[in-house]
Image (spheres, protein in one colour):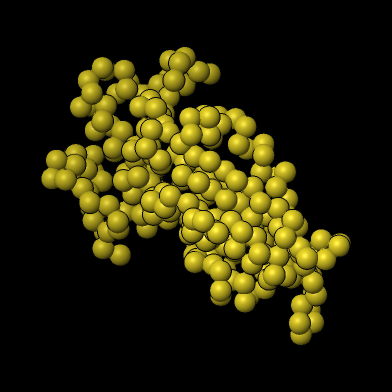
Length: 250
Ligand SMILES: C[S@@+](CC[C@H](N)C(=O)[O-])C[C@H]1O[C@@H](n2cnc3c(N)ncnc32)[C@H](O)[C@@H]1O
């Protein structure tokens, strides 16, 4: 998958690509990331990419022409799906990550200042995405959030031991608590259920822990979860079925 990042600060994005799973995915050719500096497409000698807003008001607005030239250049041979990172966009979540992972080329446009000229958005952008209800200084970190979360969903990027299938949100539930060595840490013991060696018992215990956590922290997620008959029996035995059914119907 090819990610193009359109930014006035390409250097900001180098470091997150140099370690961990992203570095490995780049080295293996599973992803490629091209950084494009909008300033290279500014027509004037001062390389201006922003200007004062028509109608007055605070701050500066990103000019449409350098952005448009950059996009035209990038897409000359192969078009891509153009995403503008923007607090006005649809809020990003795991389902959006899974959907975007289906594109072969994503072009991520990073705003700065007060944002970008609306005409550029209308003419060049396929969708606007927000990573949450807060304001960042620019779209670069938001673009990295998309790249990171999408890359780990691509086939072969995660090894079996790192599978995304059991992540929080994959089944609509929060992930169960996890433990590793030592067995006792500052007088706290690992739950006995995890030490039985009985895989069915361990899975059932983990599912109940996931459901408990989801009820406690993100009850609204339960509306989207379907439980099998076997799981419903486990929920009933753990005294959680009534709560789950009530929350699924609210
Ligand atoms: C300071 S913000 C502009 C905020 C704008 N004045 C507003 O009130 O909506 C500059 C840029 O950061 C990026 N940005 C800020 N918050 C974001 C968020 N929550 N999600 C995605 N991008 C964001 C966008 O690209 C935006 O154009």
